[in-house]
Image (cartoon, rainbow, N blue to C red; front, top):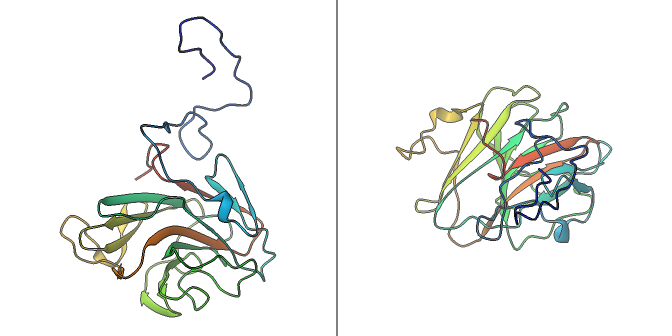
Length: 212
């Protein structure tokens, strides 16, 4: 970090920078020719983003669910991203939402609930996947620091969820079985997170090495 790639030796002295693997790594591969999704600051009504759009703090105070969604829609290719389960999972939901839905500044519920129709939400309080307020897949409660992975197949429109590399619902993205949801072709879909707690939720769309 800080080195002048031109060869002119106009180097900087790195300060408060880390190259340690994980959510604190400041050495990321994200260039105009190798560009990654981040959480969208232009579409954020409440809460704050940090760390280049990879950290979200809702500041929701346990009553107001606030949402951050990605800058890049899911396409026809295969996609994968990760979210780290926060210290308090009570109000944290990760998943996908329809792109034409506007974020609520103070929602009453997270992804997968009725605030965002058709959205798919992995609920950190119990590990269940919810769609339109109903449990679509029941799974084990994650622990703080667990890595929640999302794999999407743009050809079949199937969405899979893993915890520390093990897919819930006996999911197998390669075989195309055990998906938690099949997304409607009628909509464009975005990765998203919701929370109602003052804490940091970290995402990784491939800028860093994946943990699983």
